[in-house]
Length: 119
Image: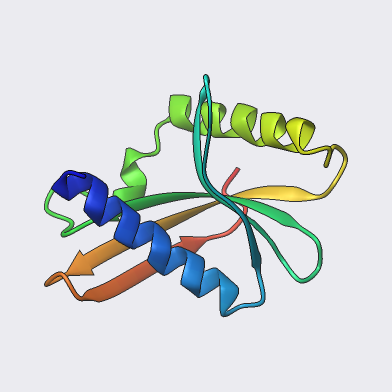
């Protein structure tokens, strides 16, 4: 696993812990089909499914991590969410797409900017 992949995996693990501490159940991690990948799929204690795109960086030198979510990426996330709901027989359930920006400082400290229902 390369350094970028390792940093990404650390960010996803941090966000998964953040969600479970808030009574979410992680349903899927790195769910992948031909059309792309969803980083995290979690269900809130109220039954809402959250599809979470995680962007992890070591600094904001090249911009905020959420700036990496382009219009095309947003459309892909919507299609992937609908595919996950269909494949997992959850059609009709309330869902949302969240984005999490993680800054990993000094390789140990995490800074989180979590935004619900961005799409």
